[in-house]
Image 1: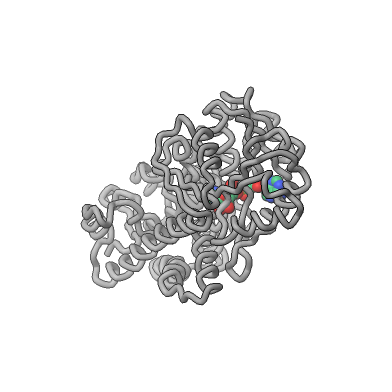
Image 2: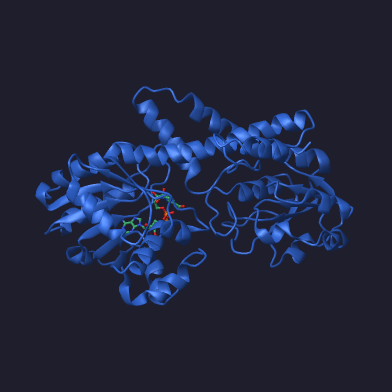
Length: 427
Ligand code: NAD
């Protein structure tokens, strides 16, 4: 199949590499010339495990450019552009709109247009109407909603081994379903077929539910702290119940990244637009918005006065195995510590600080970050932070406090080295 992907970001590039691996001829269009230059020089513009290798392996089937005439040759067009939040919480669809303008000016023969970007309910219907309004003959295209569920950090694996493939279709559109099925031939996953809007809402419901799990466990962690109980025991205890499950029950600094915060907000906005009051979505966000305060206040209480203290922060990315710092709670905590007058040394194996901050420097190693520190914060649960030699850490630090902002450390190992352990909701 000849496939054109629009947007060479985390989703677009992973989709391109995987579809090329499945035997398709794929062209990726992005308006960011720097990205295209990098890609044409064999480099990928961000860190995602296994992606560079997969792109290199399939380089004969993969091309990159900013040229829209490639659309003419493609049978399938996959839209993977960003849908960032507007200040009012709604999804900003300007990149989708720009793509529709380009498509309307280019489409001359039949295309299956697949939306992978996360878009609010009703958007795919609106896209169909917009293309028709811009002059594309209705018999020349079909729209398919095929939301993406990959996780940054394991994107390649997730796309090759999805737990389901969601396909939202226009009424009676068997032709597009067959196109999508042959596009994904080789991937073994159950299909969930629904309406265009049904597919959009599956994506939002999934992210909202996961965000709710995180806020739930963070609220439970606050209650555990108040009763001197350990949230990790509570999470383990409830996780055995198959109705609850063991995943996404790790208390910490709160959820972040480019998806959960924006998608929960966008769903809230969409609900309100139809006069549905989203009580639970509001509460999920309130807990998340205050979780950093809870953690910051714990640190402040232990290390007061914070001003002038040297704090080592391990982790800048919003989660491990990625260099993505969009809405990263780790970065937000570093900012709070900077504002409180701390001298911060931050280290991350892949991510860099997105902007300079007063009294914050980026260290080149864990060792450099913790040298002489009064306190140590684990802000992202990279594996290498969970297995530090705590006796060595104690010897290098000035103070003794270790704040496990991700509840990922072996508490006993930390305490046995003579350090003081403080987690989130760990009594
Ligand atoms: P991203 O910011 O990494 O990539 C988007 C790319 O689109 C950028 O390279 C940008 O230059 C390009 N672009 C924007 N407008 C364009 C235009 N008019 N023409 C050509 N290129 C254009 O975004 P992402 O993280 O890959 O997310 C893309 C979409 O997928 C979003 O809607 C997001 O919510 C959704 N999603 C993301 C993830 C994730 O983990 N990142 C997972 C599932 C779904």
